[in-house]
Length: 216
Image 1 (cartoon, rainbow, N blue to C red):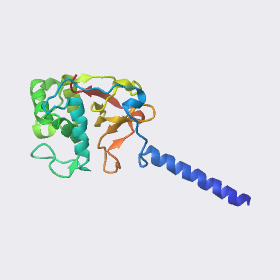
Image 2 (spheres, rainbow, N blue to C red):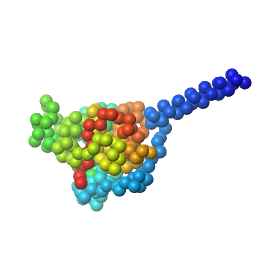
Image 3 (tube, rainbow, N blue to C red):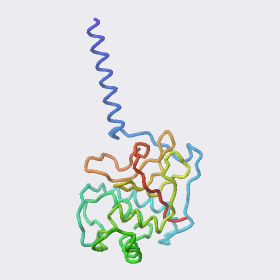
Image 4 (cartoon, rainbow, N blue to C red):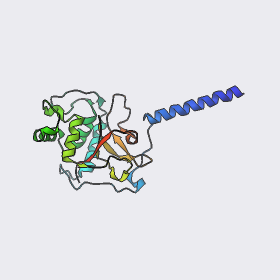
């Protein structure tokens, strides 16, 4: 009898550990909360870049969700058109397509900023079709052209869906969904093994180097 109970206890521990690992690695979806759950007022921009009647902040979030609904597969490729035109993409494409849908052509805008501020970019050969798809270039671009915000994820009121967050070697769009602590989920595309495009990962990262908002 004792042996049976011991086996059951071990199985329970193993199942608990497996659940923990799967939960931490985002294979089990996390419960999502909204701004209302934390009495946070949803930010709406005063700017409507593409004149479609939808403010920039809302438009970026809407556009990035439309992009991830295409379920892009992770692969780094060069495109003669600049923007990926097939089923593949990388982390920077999440941001590029999110902003494109709101009226901001990052390929054009980043190239213009590089030409105007070459000394700020560590680029040997300028190539408009790929420069806007590099995280290091986007960090410089947003520092020049966007509103810089806190990188402390515990200041939850300062984080809004549609914001842009940059890590040392990664980038994504802040979701309008939050975890139980009020920290927002991240909409991103980080690897071929990522199961969900919207994940509860910001609290787990210690490499956030930028948090930006495209317009007031």
